[in-house]
Image 1: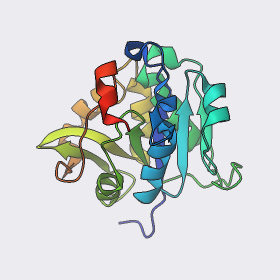
Image 2: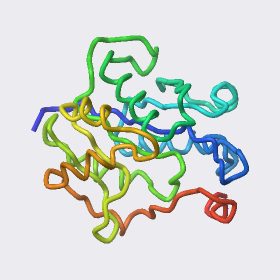
Image 3: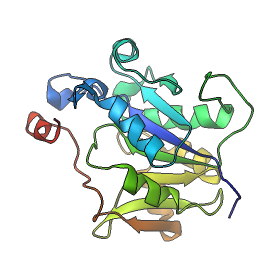
Length: 210
């Protein structure tokens, strides 16, 4: 295993909340603050010192209302096309240049892997992030949280896979097609005992937010 691997958190937070009446998920209120702040904190507490956040719907408002110091913020103008476009934007950002989390400037050092999480899954906390983070072995690693044996998020993509994932990420499928094709290579990390993988998709789901 690589000594002290650099594993960056990649938070997909571009969704417009169509089934929530057009309320961008990044701005949903959680414990008195925008949900995107909670998601970033979870990644950091789970071991990701560098965090890239892909924004889309009302990106300017998210930048204004959310406190995201040290994060690299990526605007995805194609967010309405689905999660695939946000995943591509995030991976391209990581691949093209390293960044200093305190300044947002390039360092020339690219991460060894990306740990991808979704802004609308507040039931997944630092413990699950840390478990998947610990599954890293090399830039060829593919790992994912599992819930009673069923693959879910977060997902860890070693850098060797980024180009292939970006090429196949279209619409709302994200990395689904790539992961299906490489299923035999995926390390599943059981997390059902420490996390709940529900999504905030509809008004009924807002009960999960405080």
